Amino acid sequence: MNLGLIHKSLRETLWVTLLCGTAVMVFEAFLAYIFNTFEWDLAEQWLQSDFFQSIIKSLLGTEFNGQIGLGAIGSIAWVHPVLLALLWAHAITICTRVPAGEIDRGTIDVLLSLPVSRWRIYLCETIVWLTGGLLAIAMALLGCKIGHLFISSAEPPEWGRLLMVSANLFLLYSAVGGLALLISSLSDRRGRSVAVVFAVVLVSFFLNFLTQLWEPARSLSFLGVLHYYRPYIILRDGIWPWRDISVLACATVALWTTGGIIFSRRDVCTV
Image (cartoon, rainbow, N blue to C red):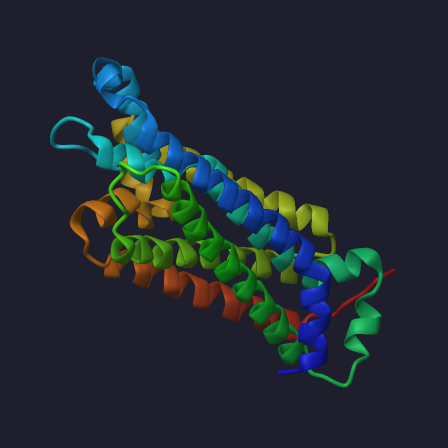
């Protein structure tokens, strides 16, 4: 570990982390307020229509035994496309900085000329990336807390279950970041790396959506990263999703390790 490299990376990524974290906090506060003040009784018939049930099931990626209730609606805040897009954008932005971003700017020679190994550079970037992700998700929880402060009649959220959701969300974030690190290690252009990772997560999102609408697609649902993130089930049952956490953790470690091996051994050319 090199404190100088960590300080450099933190300085260069601070604005991205603050921007994404603030946006996540504001968005979660807004949803917490809306979901707890909206007159759901007036919209009960609307919510139980087949069309809107299909949309909600697709967003949450799970089936319902009965009618869709407030618990299902509230869990949308933790799987909303805006939240996922902000967190994924943060992971992709930071994890494609090295080496693809440095090669693209023509500054990789300066970075590699430092008296530190490539693995140490890779590790420092990893620390900055994961720290930023933890901060962004912590700000999401803060936003949920702020949203409830303005609602005197709302039941307080079950923080134990929200922490479970946050842990699962962090590993989802980590898996996407691990993929970005791997693609970045293989590429000489940051734009190309971002496009590839974005395409993968976009396909994963639509696959999660499609599996609830089209029966043949369900056999492929395990290929999507969102298959291993089900906040509604966690909030409903209060049970740690150990299988999903294990899969995401193993995927993160495998992607991160492969990316590090490639970066440590590859030839780098800025011409």
